[in-house]
Every structure is written in C-alpha cells, then in structure tokens.
Image (cartoon, rainbow, N blue to C red; front, side, top):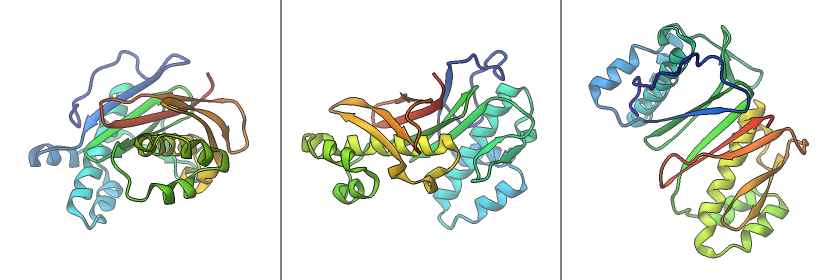
Length: 228
C-alpha cells in the first residue's frame, strides 16, 4: 500500500479475459519515500511535477506516477524507469511496448490503478458532503438521472451523486475521450442504494460493463470496462 511496494503477480502481462486487477495505494509519503519516487519518473514527468504550484499537489502527482510505474513495471517485468507510454488522440495513455490496458485515478491521499486485457477506465472519489449538490446534479445528470436522484432521501443524495460522478468519469476515461466526451453522454439507471447500472455510453447501449470496487470505507471506486 505504499508507492513502489507492490504485490508480485505471476505473468501479469497476460490478464485473463473477464478479469480486472485493481491496486490501491497511499500517497501519504515521507520525504525519503518521495525522493525514491522521484527517481522513477522521466524528464517530462518531472517537468510536469514542477508546474504544480501547490507543494502538496506536486507530492501527490509524483507519488501517483511512481505508483503507476511500479505496478506496470511489475506486471510487464521491466524496470519501472524503463516503462514507456504512448498516448491516444485525447491523451489516454497506453504501454508503448505492449501489455495490459490500464487506467489510474487518485483522490486525497489515495490512488487506484486498474489493469485488464480490454479497454477500461477507473475513477476514485472520497465520500464527502457536497456544498452545492443540486448545482452539480444539474451539470452532470440527464433528465432521467436527475429525476431519480431527486427522489432519493436527502441523506443519500451526496453519496449517490458522487457515485454517479465516478461512473461517468470512469466511462469517459474508458472510451479515451475523458471529460471532453460530455458527462451527459453517459447515462445510468439509479435505483436507491444499489450500484448504478450503465444504460448508455456515448450512443452505445451495450458493450460496456460497470463494476463497483470500493477499496475501503469512505472511498468510492468505479470501473467501466469493454466487454463482459
């Protein structure tokens, strides 16, 4: 659960069809651990880190990127420093030298990395009170989603809206478009305290599956993956 310290996985570059492998780690590192993380990053990543004006945001970026490199190095049996990335049209990363599909997300001092043999997206959010939930709901919900959300008990609405956000962001990351693909282009079916069901993704009515994978109390994590 610390950046750079990962569980080994035999032949991890060949994840069986239908499986998603999820890692959860902490970004709360001391200075010595952070220094070790910096040694795993390449020049462009270090330059990107320096563009963060808030020191804590810079620390989290370094720790999250080092965690990602450590995991990908582990599952592809290469030095984490030698992991090379290529990027899609909208910036979604993949392994330049081949290997599993992957996606990562962080929130607060937590990071998750998801890997599979098919395209996928993951999003992680801290469960927390929302300052203006109605405004957020109007911004991200379709008409049907908003109507279902408004019927929930008031005490359940913040968690439901955060879950909806993780599902929509994971779905758009899975397609490779990111948030530019439009949050309202992802539609889910809300049913009380049950996990939302993916109904429509950018015009597609099937071909994608939503998985809830909360790693701990107070953390909401949703994975959207192509296929079954």
